[in-house]
Length: 323
Image 1 (cartoon, rainbow, N blue to C red):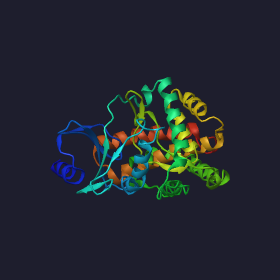
Image 2: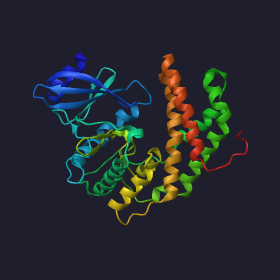
Image 3: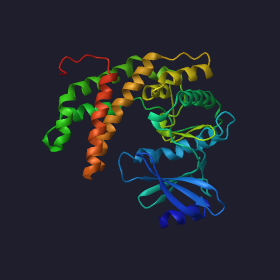
């Protein structure tokens, strides 16, 4: 914590009077920081020693200037987080194994996925519509934010399933009955990637992870956790309707705010399947490479089991060998 205080003071000019841990996402620990003037900040600490966290650290310098511009735009001011740069204009600093990033704090409630009301879900659709329209006006280059359509994780997942052996013990036991389903779902995602010609689809600026765990209800709804910000088809945001109890309301709010846009249902299905598979694969990687605590292991087993069932629900094929 002393490193945090030193860097906040020396690099950001923020003299903290309190630093309080708050609930964060899997990519970073989060803290609420109050300075001597009463200004409140959100501090994220990314552990760059973790393989699944390093990609987020690498993207910080690419997405944060864009987020700063969005936060000052008339359409999205107060609806997105505002990043805070260092005295030298950087957007992250290193503290041992941690990389720190700072934002203005948004005071409010976190509805989470299960707590999102219909009205909040409509509002989220409106925010995404504003984001997709506003992104076209960015007056500077945005390197490092191109959509990755390689789906390399699908290839890695298939290879992992093909060489499973007893070294992974209980994990192999968990995956084995579903291996053919998971292989088939990965192949279907790769097929859709090729047949839908994603590289020729019009691109907009997408948040990439706009579910209820990443929104804050202040006087208005605000969208947080922008590490996945990228240029992609609009459906790369809209697929998230599948996460919400009022998911159709998100699409209705979006279409009402962005008149003339017609949702590509095949793309929507592709992005939903892609995300379900990717979540399972990331949890497997985190379990194998980053987790040793027994209680954490059991959590990951639960998440992986749930993720497999979500893949099953989304995948439209009928592999004959699945029992």
